[in-house]
Image 1: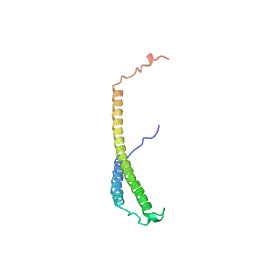
Image 2: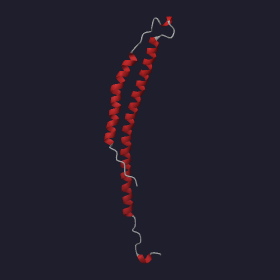
Image 3: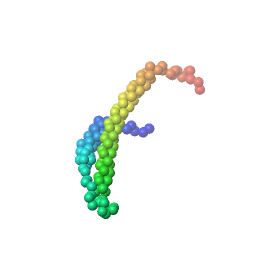
Image 4: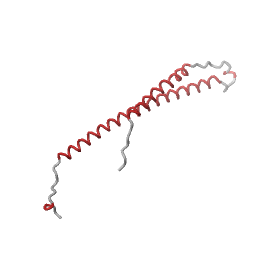
Length: 122
């Protein structure tokens, strides 16, 4: 039989909330700042094909901003999943205790088997 797993649901819930809160507090302001940046068009881009530095920088900024947004959302989802996991562990513990109590009650109410050796069939 394997050893029971003990989960510190309070700690799991705390870590989940902290991850969600910190990702919101740290990453979203950075995303907000980056999403407001505007890189002006390069006035000389038309004269030298392939050298539009402003367009390249704008594309990179857009990609980084989107990746940052996705990362913030994923971290919040992971934090929320940790909190849900803690709740699921707690629910499972309650259900296990209830079932264990029901089994113990059923055993207490079960009739005692016949222990008279003269009635045993050998």
